[in-house]
Length: 626
Figure: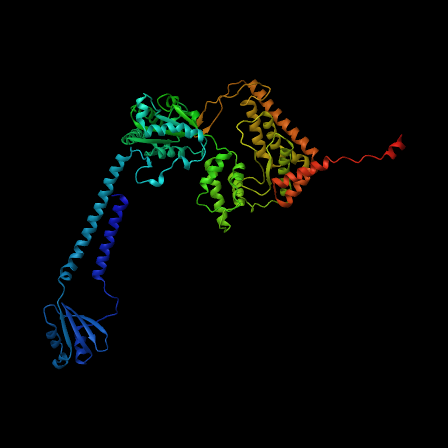
């Protein structure tokens, strides 16, 4: 019986005991007067008493006017004799009905006994509770080294079962894991061929891509128990507890004939040993050593397969990745446009969608979104529709949720002054105009000066297709676009504001990556900076430089060259199209938001006007000049 059930039984027992005592001693709240025997004698002589009820030494008096009173008689003397001794006339006493009741045997002995036994019972219950808690504490002390893995997919948990059809996308990853499912279903086929199925499968991918769901789907497809734990659950204050939990976890998994043991966030205990400031972490390293030993101890016929997930595969210890351990690595990518549409269909189940909802359009506008981001998007759309008292989720809620997931909620209470609104409008117009003027840049989806999250305004770009690689020309276009707002402020107002600080930070970071990581500068195809991590308190406290001070100065010059070139390019575009810049900014001040269709119409209108041929001078004028 669980602790909750036991405590419920104790509470019920106490409640019943209190109820029994209350029922035993309960008497109605009546205002009954207590009188003496001498007064009772007077009332009898006056003929006011109708009936007297005697129960032991207690006397209940009923008057002729239906009122009641109480009294007590002497213990060793009868009531009649006592009344006659007090001067009651015999004829008056004869007119009174006297009823004698025998006192209940239970009340005779229970009344005194309860006052003796009740304190004793309370003390006994108190000491029993104390000893029970002490025994529970001892049990918990022994359970301290037990692994607290959650069990999914076992008998009695049909609702927890997930299969491949519940996980959209990840086609290549599913194909890699099908042989694991086949082995769990039919291990004899592989053993007959002398094949050795990988004992450890490592799922690599960015956060939210679906690593845990895919692992559960493997267990669901194979119809085997799924033991779920995380790397952080092994690390404790006391050295050796993590290793004990590892032993208990593997022992529990081996008891099942066929099962999947899933360790989430493996990098919490699987980092390279001996790294970090001040040496390694003894508890974490002992836990990692125990995992390595346990994985080596699997027999070939064992039906337990270890699945692990991490988004930091680059920091794992090489001993974890050698053959015989996590030698099968499955990479999970962010979903493409087709997978995003399928993922949203799954998350839209159970939500009333309007007829105008186009999930394909939403999928095209959400490149780079993970499965968790898309689930959050659909949920935010449902919340937004409920907040607006709608019965269905419409397309406008879905589109607005994209911006909420990307940038945060709208802050319409963050009101800008007239001057600040003008600066923000020109700033965002500069971003959008530079992006629209460069063919290598991504198309502008929306411009707004309504605050969202920490941004006072934003220019939203959406690529026309999913991209895995970018060229140097595209990077330079992004740099020029990032400096569009900065250059606009200089051209229009002649001074700069703090609104461009975030743009400058991102542009500088991108320019430095072009030089140090991508080899796109005049320094040649060299990667500068050592990737080996030095981490303290969860942060990188420095970079291992593998280049000299002279090269560092050259890197700074190249970064400056990229930034200056982007500034010159953006300034040239903005000065050439100054009228269009003013028009976009004024429209933005008036409407606060410009969608893609309206923005493209402004660009096309200005292009058509500039391309209109000028009128030729008449021939008559030319002849006069000749």
